[in-house]
Amino acid sequence: MLMIPASFPSRSTGRTVRETLAIEKATAAALAERVPQLECTISDLRMQLEAANTTSAEMRANLEAERKTYAARVEELEKMGTEIERNFAVLASEVLGKNSENFLKLMSERFAKHKAAADKDLEDRQKAIELLVKPVSESLSKFEHTVEELEKSRVGAYSAITEQVKNLTEGQVGLRTETSRLVQA
Image (cartoon, rainbow, N blue to C red; front, side):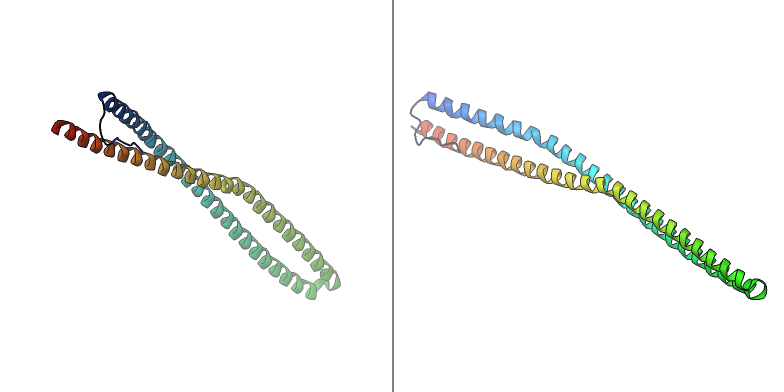
């Protein structure tokens, strides 16, 4: 904080105050020039964060669509399995007897293998999607941290500029007061 002496002993002290005020004004102007750049950086980071959020949402939607597709396939396979079992049961009872019973067992095993393969396929896809989403999630965390840091920096810069302007105002008031005193003297 700039302290102006109670009396102006000489002209050189007035120059020192002016020079100090000029330096503080230049410092405040330099800080003020950084604010638009910081705001632009914050804006860019926010856009990147929004893009990452959009990508994450799309990946979640894709995962949900895959899950629905998988559920539909399982249901269809179960229906097909039920239908196949019914058809073969009729044939077995009419024509084949015990041989058709063995055939049904074989079909059930194949169905189980196919279902196991479909389950493994879904699990692999889920893992792949999670691997894709994980970097996006980490990037989101980094972006949020960076935005928070930039926001703190911006607030600090505004505080410093406000303090400098306040100091300049107080200096000007003191300078006017001293000038008035000199004029009256």
